[in-house]
Length: 403
Image (cartoon, rainbow, N blue to C red; front, side):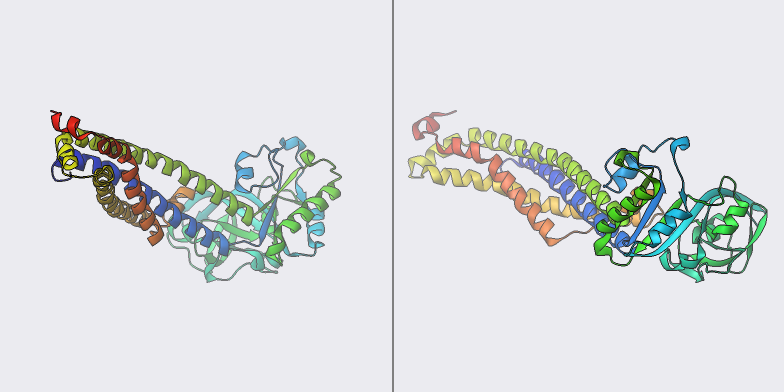
């Protein structure tokens, strides 16, 4: 049939190729993104939790979803974090380090260039133990540092034209010595007491966020519950919906991102499956047409002794061959598309979460290839089942008289 009706058959095969190729490309890119994401989050701060002012009216779990859907209290009703909160957190058994932070925008000047960037003040005593950003040069902030800062590589080498170690940058008119450069980012970190002195809208006793590191990450859930209970008790809060703080762990964020990625993959795969459905309809149409064209031949075969099951096998084989050829083409096209998209995106500097996911490349497994290939053949045979059955039920006399 593939040779007798070349145009019709190959148009049908192209539909299968598009569907299988789209499914493989989507699944491969999604798998690559998920593996990359798990590797990144798994090694960066899996044992770290963050406490921030304000509380979501949504669920207290769900990490990223909570951050995205949160509706915090109004500013006048919102109570900032204080040293009392840090004292309570340090008394919790599974918490190893506690670091308070303040954050505010500031004017940065270096070598005649001026920009506005967010500056973060950190408690230097334990910050070097809890920080998740790696150094490319220099050292972290430590106890005793005053007019010192640690900056991100992007700030040092892209935003400004090459800030080197031990150079001075000006923040809000004050000189600060660069003692460390992180491997990435455009962040600026300084001792929290100095940040309180030079940054506006930063209180003397308040914190914008508190980071804690747990000793045993397997007890993160229990520790989070204890943090919530202890801070609610400290603040005299009895009802969950009256909470004025939020606790977020990297494990929650990772789980929520994985959940969103799985949903996205399922949605995109469903769209790709429409192409497979169209291809299956094309196979059925091709097989119905083939039955009409070969009615006389079916009558001749039955007249010389062919059984119904023999006729059915012939047409099922033909429809399966369409799925087989379409599967081969789909695997090739899908693999090339996945490698092309993953390879081209990893060679560009993308921003944000989407860029990070695209930069992760694609992972094409044998299970994916074999599964897609077998699925293509099965789709072909299912689509050809009804036409094959109709062909097998034709009566020899009627088939021979058909014109």
